[in-house]
Amino acid sequence: MDYLIAYEFYAKGENNSSHLIGILPERRRDERRITYESVMNWGKMYLGDKTGLKNFYCVRVEIERNTGTIRESGMLKPEG
Image (cartoon, rainbow, N blue to C red; front, side, top):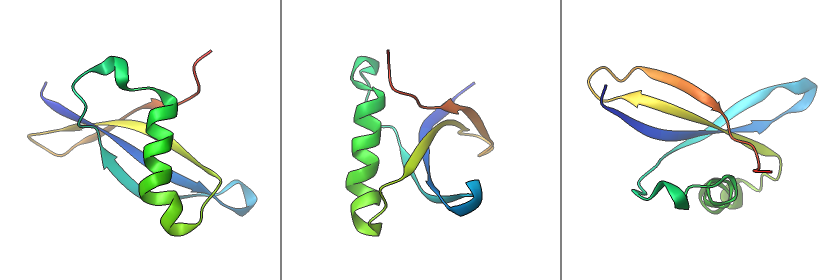
């Protein structure tokens, strides 16, 4: 299956609610460079700084190129 990797960023709200604030596509070809810290820093740079958000998290998704179907791959967590 041919798919793109992307990251959905969610803001944590009151009462354990979550709000989608943005989606960023992965463009790096070297998977060794893709870490929790690098993705979260990227999200802060593009989404957090503009909105002033401090409390957000990220979910890795796969988007099928032919259909646009989005499949969640899991919440990103720090290594270790």
